[in-house]
Length: 75
Image 1 (cartoon, one colour):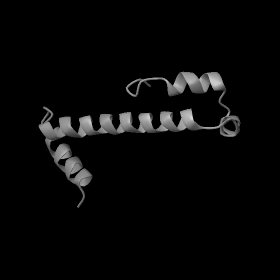
Image 2 (cartoon, rainbow, N blue to C red):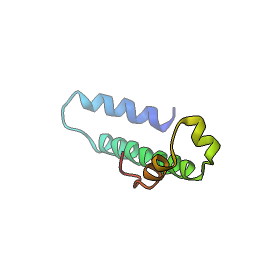
Image 3 (cartoon, rainbow, N blue to C red):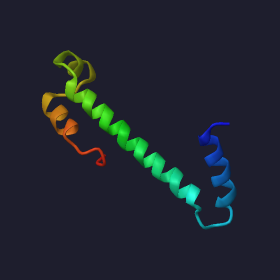
Image 4 (spheres, rainbow, N blue to C red):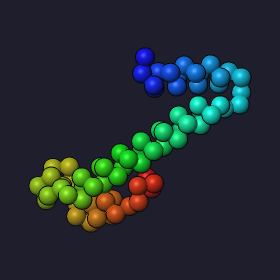
């Protein structure tokens, strides 16, 4: 059984009783950190994309500049 499955089982069992446990908080924090890592990674890739790729996905240079310069915590 992987760690994610353990967190979901334990989290689900305690969720019935109302108050979140430290496992619920930790699982939530891990999801946030993973989201931030994904944003950072994709923005870095977008910043490195050439003009052909930008045309293919329909993004202008200005849009790329704006999106790739956002901090990782911002949507």
